[in-house]
Length: 104
Image 1 (cartoon, helix red, strand yellow):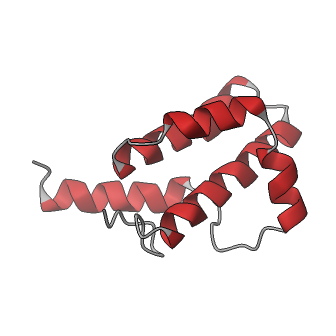
Image 2 (cartoon, one colour):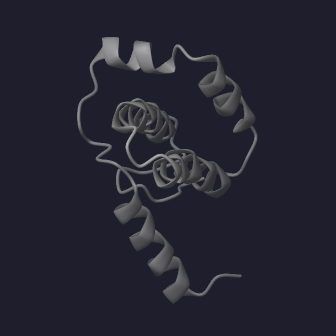
């Protein structure tokens, strides 16, 4: 079981590693970003996972790509829209609170 200190460190890391999830996304940019077979396959692979595991997978989806392809900012931006949209869905679904803390 995680100690209080390590749980606080994990929450702090979560807050630093995510894009600004409070920013508004336009409907057209969301629809364009999510209209992608690879994204839909990835998104479906998250179903049934604990929220913490979903967050880890989303982090790697976004940041591992950036580390491997530092110059492809356009694709990174599209991935960021997908991740922000997914995080917002987790908040709407009650899995995360608005501080990006796992609720369930």
